[in-house]
Image 1 (cartoon, one colour):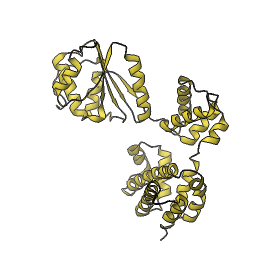
Image 2 (spheres, one colour):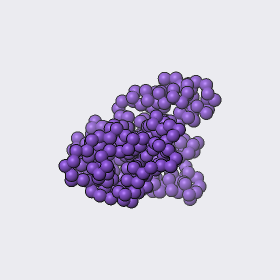
Image 3 (cartoon, one colour):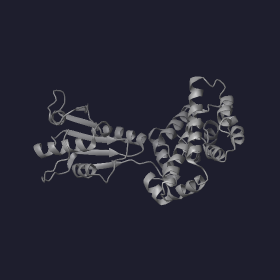
Image 4 (cartoon, rainbow, N blue to C red):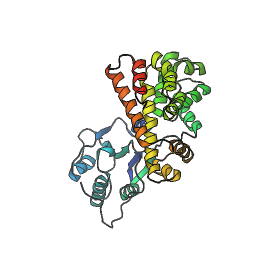
Length: 328
């Protein structure tokens, strides 16, 4: 595929070319379905683009269909080199002028595109509309609650506001997990209104995740094992382990950037995280060395593997063995 066009020809924005992207992949897919529903009628044809040259792209967009006068074409940007794809689109528009009537093209990505690149700026000039779906801020939980309330209403799920707030308190801005838990509660309630007590009884809080992480950072391995015993013994340990892997993966990134001499504001800008929270975590990690953090992270990974494979046939005992092996 070609590079970005160097032509001086003015390319007009295409009414039938849309862009959808963002870092909340789950909600991007929801938006994609909504776009499909709003744009697709009985006479339309859906084409999933798979091409290796500009000629292939030309035939997909400008080629006539024997079955429909209209086409709705999806292009997953994650499958292609963005610069090359944008160059091909520019070339086609310079050659053909405009996309044909009856053809709508939706470019989509479950990752947020870098708006600073030439590729994005060229794409921005071509598309009629940009839909950007980003994760809700963890520091503005009411935005997440409002979105989940609308989702529940659309899917005819009755739930108390306090129950929604408790779900968000448990799972933060993880839209995929929130919807999964909401649907689980809907099945549990058999269509009746979901109450606050239903959430408390059937969903797990992640509040202990950070307290347990702090115990590991403090090398309080015995205290960690005692605190985690209930979760490991009476429920699946895997959600806890995955959550802690995420916490320590984040800690490693912050520690590496901090050790490189970057301050909290620079780290927040690079990672896209809240500056205040970054400052708190960087301060916490000052007394911790990278080697120890890596040992913790790999121990949690090893423990997850041992439980999943059955090597650790007793999860509680295996957790105690793996964590206490860190004592040195």
